[in-house]
Structure formats: C-alpha cells, structure tokens
Length: 300
Ligand code: CP
Ligand code: NVA
Image 1 (tube, rainbow, N blue to C red):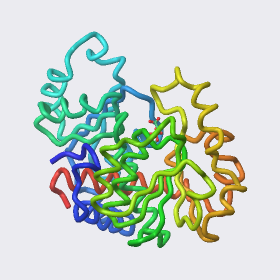
Image 2: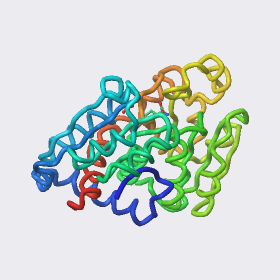
Image 3: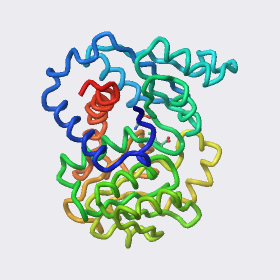
Image 4: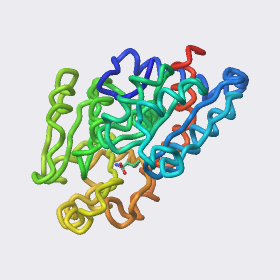
C-alpha cells in the first residue's frame, strides 16, 4: 500500500486516516513502540522544514528511525536511476517517503521499491498536507457537508489539486479563485465534480463570500522561481488581506500550508490574526504523518 495522491484515495479511506490521526493525537503514548526496529528513508529533491521534521519526529515517537537523504548527496545526483535506487532502498528500509518535482518519479519509485511509498510533495500533489488539513478543519468544526471551502491564488499546482479533491471527497463545496491566466487542473476539477459542487471564479470578493474556510499558498511554488516577477504581477489582486476577509463568514478560518511569503499571498495581519489556524495545521502534520506510516505498515 502507498500514499501517492488524493486522486487515488476513496472517501472512506480519507475518513480512516482522519480517525486514526485524531486517536494518535489524543493518546500518543499508546503508539510509542509501534514501529520498533522500522526504518523510513526520506528522499528530498526539494527543500522542506515541516515535512522532513514531522516525519522524522513521528518515526522517533513511534519507536522507529528515519534517514534523511538529500538528493544531491546520493548517487541519484550522479545519474543512478530511480529504478535502481528504489530497488536498493527497498532492501534496507521498511518504508520510503520522497519529495520530488515530477509526479511520474514518485510513481517510478513506488513501482520498484517493494515497500510502501509516500508522496511528500510533487508538482502535482501534496497528499499528506491535504489529509492533515482536513484534520485541522475537522477539529475547528468546519469539515461538514455543504460547508464552503475557498482556495485563492495559484489554483493550478499541488496544494490546490490535493485540497480540491480532499474537500470534495468530504462533500464540502469548493470555490477556486484564480486569474484566468492560471486555470486549475481540468482533470482535478472534473474528478472533484463527481463528489461535490465546484466553482472556478476570477473575482476574489465574489468568490470569498460566505466562505467557511479560506486557504492560500505561495504564488511561487518550488521549481517556479523563474516565473517569479510575472507571477507576482498576475496574482497581486488575489492577496488574502483583511479587506478581502471581511467578505467571508465572521467565524471563517484562514489556512496556509506554509512556508508563507508574508506580504505576497497573505498579509501579516491575516496570518497572525484571529481567523488564522496555520500553526495548528503545522502541528497536525505530525499526528497525520504517524497515522499515514502506521496505516501503510499495517500497524493500526
Ligand atoms: N507544508 C510543507 O510541506 O512544508 P515544508 O515545505 O516545510 O515541508
Ligand atoms: N505549493 C508549494 C507548497 C509548499 C509546501 C510548493 O510546491 O512549493
């Protein structure tokens, strides 16, 4: 069993992850020795703070061990194939997590590893983040059928893809607010429409009206640095600021996967303000990572 995308998760599988993560969060001591003797390899082709630390701490707290492998200091940087790397690692470790550019590369690892593989972010999806964000929404009383989830900004990349499907599969209504120049991934929108209502709008004030949850992410995702100045121009009208937030529900929550580019996609006033739950989100990464690893290793 792998966790490669929200696309391939069923609604009831998402619910199982949520229930297990809640249980682990409430009673962490009950899981202290669950992964004694187990090792995770963590391959990073892109930078990370939260994903790396939460998986590594999670493995430690479960009694296991995690090995950090920076892409550039492995033989991958000298041309060894993902095929050979995955087969080799599969002979040593019990589970592999990888953060990569191309989604096809995580599929390649999963095909050859012979052990469970977790997508720690690709250009297409960030499933671990989306699952832990659902946990945060649930804790805040927002994960309800018919509640309005709004994603504003770059709706064409990993976070928007994973959240769109994760929320739709939990029957939330999804509004994507983005410039016409950067439309969302049509496959993801069409798939999400099978589960819930999805609308794509380019007017921030109209889109955010009556929102229960408002989510934003960087306009310059890892790997898109060359497009920085163009993107800043395109996305400037889509900044999540106090003026815009006034149009959401009074008790709306503001979410961001982090890292944030303060003053760009979100202002200091909003990210540090009373609606923001961003550090609860960051904490929940730890509880959800544990749930993911335990499930994939058949230990829960
Ligand atoms: N949200 C998230 O995945 O953060 P990192 O890039 O720090 O891992
Ligand atoms: N969309 C962002 C998410 C970072 C966690 C990126 O890919 O850089």
